[in-house]
Image 1 (cartoon, rainbow, N blue to C red):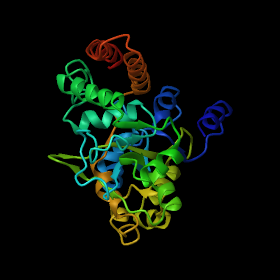
Image 2: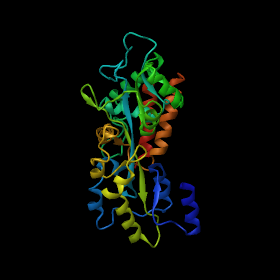
Image 3: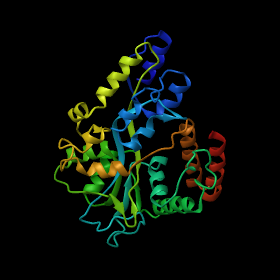
Image 4: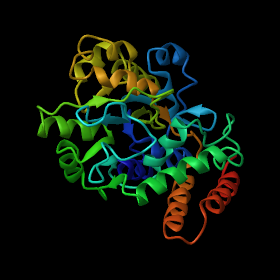
Amino acid sequence: MRNKLLVSKQNDSLPDVVFIDPQWLPELVRLDILCILDTQHDYNEVTEQLLSGAIETGCRGVHFYGLPFSLTSQLFIYNPQIVTIPSLSFHQINNNSDIYSLGISEINTANIIPFLWNNGGELLNIELTKATGYFNSTNNINSVEMFINSYKENLIYDSTGDQNNLMEMFVSGKIGMIMGDTTFLQSLNERYPDFIFEVVHDFPDQKSETILNSTLLAIPNNENTEISWEIIKVLLSKEVQINFTGFNFIPANKEAMQSESFNTDEFSFYIESIQNARALPNVSSWNEMDNEFSIMMIIKLEGYISLEQGMNGLANTWDALLP
C-alpha cells in the first residue's frame, strides 16, 4: 500500500481514504501526501469516541494525519501451572534451569522498551525534545543491564523469529511467561485451544505497560476531502466497528470495545491490557532513532562497549535527531 500511494501521488490518482501503518507517516507527511485531520470542524467530537492512547499513533509534529481504525499491542501472558506471580525480576522457576522465565520472538527494541516503562523509565522528556537524562537514566541503564544479564543467564529465551517454536516451548511448560502481540495470541488459540494461560495486567507494584500500535485511517491530499472525512467517521463509528470485531480486529472505538460483541471470555483480556499500552514517541525521526537503538544493542551484545557508554552515546544521538 505504501508503494501504491507513492505511485498514485506521481499519477495524481490518490484514493479518497487509505489504511496506513504509523511507521509510514514520516515519509508520507514529508512528501505532502496526507491531509491534516485535526483541522476538521468536528475532529474533537470524532476523537472523543476513540481510545486516547491510540490517537497518538497518528500524530507527527503538532498535527494528526491519521486516526486509529484497529489496535494491536504486546501482551505479557504466563502459564499459571508453573508461574504463581509473574514478575520482571527474572529468576529460575521452581529451581529448574530448564525452564525459561520469559520467551520473546527476538531481541529488538520493541521487546526492550516495555522493560524501561515497567521499571519506571522514560525514553524522552514530556515535550519529546530531549533524550539525555531520560533514556540514559540510571534506572533505564539498570533495566537494560538486567535484561541483558537475564538473557546471558538463559532466563530469557530468544526464538529468533520462530513463533511456532515459541508457542511449543510455552505450551510444553519450558517457558513461564511470553511477550507477544495479538497475532501471536490468535495463533496460540487456534493451535492449542485447550491450553490455559493468563494475561498480566499488573506486575507487583506496577502496571504492565507495553507498546500500542494501530492501523490508521488517513486522507490523501485530493479534491474529495469532505467526502473522505465522512467515510472515516462512518468507519470509526461504534456500529461499524462492532461488525469487524475478531482476533484480527481490536476496535479503536471505546464503546465498541466495551460492547457485548467484544467483551466476551474470548476477547475480554485485551481490554485492560490495551488500555495500559502506550504509543511510541510521536516524533518524525523515530524510525531512525529506533534503528540507532538496535545498532547500539548489537554492539553492546558483541562486547565492544559498556552499556553505559552505549546508552549515553545513543542519548546524544537521539538529541541531535529530535526537534
